[in-house]
Length: 168
Image (cartoon, rainbow, N blue to C red; front, side, top):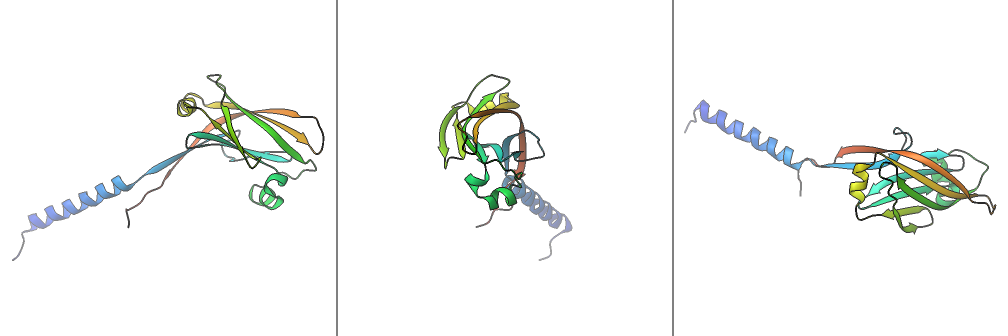
């Protein structure tokens, strides 16, 4: 039995609309939120150490990187850390939001190099603050003197597509 051109055109349109709906529904995105001193640079590199500040779910993670804490290969090769004669040991980190003057509570320190901060209203604090103040405390080599250094970081959002056509 031969179909009319109008029915063929209708079937093709339904197929195209169905495929478009499938692609639109299957597209998902993820927005990574970080705070950076220079929005083009993922890591804040200093003399003997580097820092990062990222939202990971319901916590804010401040990564502290030194050749001793992460190994010279990772620090110098992957992070492209600055060469230094200083042996830095980061001993504490504090985070406060500039616009609202809120501070985050330290939840835990992982492997003496990742500082995990939490707040029940973290999402609201992130939305309401484009800048934060990161304060680190460190010792140089074997010195008993603790040095305090402050950085102003700017919120950086990066949205990426995470989904394509559904598969089994």
